[in-house]
Length: 506
Image (cartoon, rainbow, N blue to C red; front, side, top):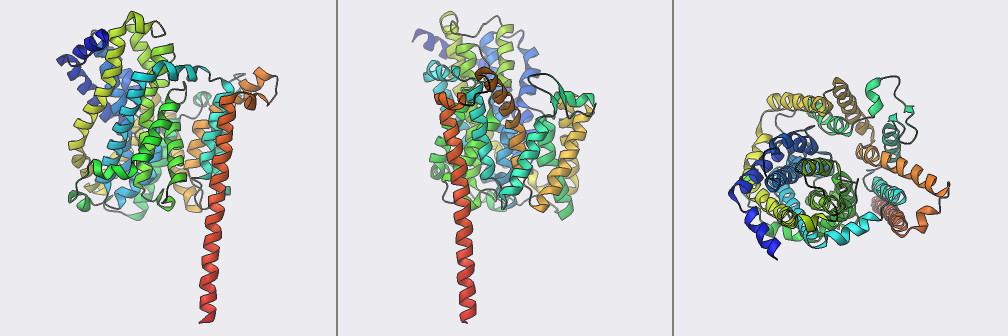
């Protein structure tokens, strides 16, 4: 308790509060711009922490992390341009709501779900860090492969009208994920002697192309003068009473995000898609998903923000970063002369509780800062398309270039933009491709490592409890999605037959 009380005095020190707000501001700007990832934003801020005390430095970087993760939804909702990969699942429903004049509602739901999930993961981080870390420590290649398979079953739920076309797109995404160096043998694959492809197809430029640039092509084709109207939004207030109908979805997605975030090497994108899929599976309004579902926005945003606190669990307790962002945070701790791990709670107890409690305060400050600013975000949709679209396109291409300072990333974004523009016109959805690009490499490397461990014996995936559970969940997820699809098609056929009988009788 002495350490907890001492941490309170540090958290509310004026300089720490100021730097937390600075971090939140930087995160909001970076997260909302396509291509300027949260990882890049945190990395760019590290040089400014060299002369700061350890608690101030880490709290500012946590502010960048939390705000940047949330801010990816701003571009996803308003412009169908996810600022981060973790917000890709938000783009379809969020942008559809914006087109219906409900941009403010979507942004508010995103904020409330993000903050609620952030607070939930912060409390788990505070009270259950050692216990959750013990479970995450049991994850090996078989468990990662089973988790990836479970994530890939989402394709059955986001396949649109044709499951076969979704499988084709997912297969294309898996193929794209193999470009570059073989993760085991380091042999080149599908690089066509192009040096820039040795590192594979980067996710950020591909995502910018599939969602942002393709949407620019669609809007230019339609000749839309502005994205949406916020007249309806301006007459309505949004508060916690609007969130209560979705409280179960937010809680469930927060739990999913926290569990996945505690597993090193996963991340918000996986948690977001799995949460979205689970919300769609259990929803009473499945038909609204992809067409403007508030529940879909709540699920995906709660899922990706639920990982933020959980990724710190393995970092602080085991010294193992939970994702790429926490790997950057690890370097910041090491620069400050602090070695994360089991002894951290004993050697730097006050600092640890400052980080744990400060994480909760950052989420509260995020809500306080963003809530009154949402009405200004909405005004983006009123800008004439002749001005807005060129700006967005330039930002997209700049974001793709800034990802690794390579013009090849710009070409990748443009190519994927063409893919995202043409293929959906023939009924081929792009989300299965994105899911496969994200999960394919993890599934491949984990599968090959697992078989190497077991001497090419597949029994390893079912003899380990955690991997067996994930494989069972994958089977149930795919079965339920296909069953519900068949039942829906049967109902449609029955209704069509009844209508035909009525017509013939008349």
